[in-house]
Length: 201
Ligand code: HEC
Image 1: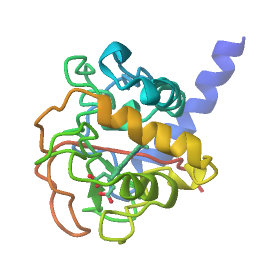
Image 2: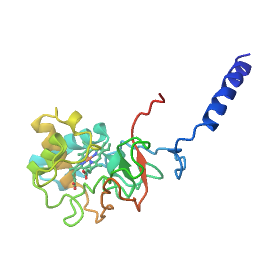
Image 3: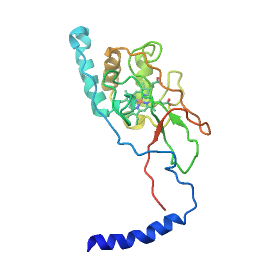
Image 4: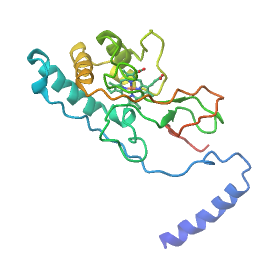
C-alpha cells in the first residue's frame, strides 16, 4: 500500500520537473561517494624532543578529532584517501556556493599541511599557523576562504592550537602543490565538489 501511494505521489513530481526549464545544477557532475577520513597519522615520538612529545601527541589527537584530514588529505573528499601522503593537500577543490547561484563558483583547494618548505607549511611560524587555524588568516594576514571551518576552531585554547602546530611540524614533509584557487567566474580546470545544504523552495 505504502509503495503504491508513493508511486502515485512521484508521478506529478516527475511531470513538474520535466516542465521546469531552470538549468540543471547537477549537469556535468557525476555522483561519487564521499570517502571522508578523520585519521591523523601517528608520529613516532621517540624522534621528537622530550619536552615536545606531549604537545605532539595532543596535536595528533586534536587533528584527528577536528577532521582536518577530511579536507586536507588528497582523495578524502571523493575517491580513495592517499594514505601515503596524509594531510599533504587536496587536488579536489571545494566550492562554497549553491550550484544555482554561480555557474562558475569560486573554488578553494585545501593546501598541504606537511612541513615541506616549498609547497607546505615549512616556512610558517607557529603564530602564523595558530592564526590560520583560529582566525582564518593566511600568512600575510588576509582572510582564508570560507571553506575552512575556523570559526569553530576559534575557541581552541592556546595550548591546543599550539599542539596542532607542533604536530603538523612533526609530520613527514611531502612535496605536493595543490591546484591554484579559482575565482568566481573562472572555469575550474581541476575537479571540485560543492559543500552546502540546499532547500527546494
Ligand atoms: C571543510 C574543509 C576543511 C577542514 C575540515 C579544515 N580545513 Fe584547513 N583549509 C581548508 C581550505 C579550503 C583552505 C584554503 C583556504 C584558502 O585558500 O582561502 C584551508 C587552509 C588552511 C591553512 C592555511 C594553509 C595555507 O597554505 O594557506 C591551514 C594552516 C589549515 N587550513 C589548517 C587546518 C587544520 C589544522 C585543520 C583541522 C584543525 C583544518 N585546516 C581543517 C579547508 C579545511
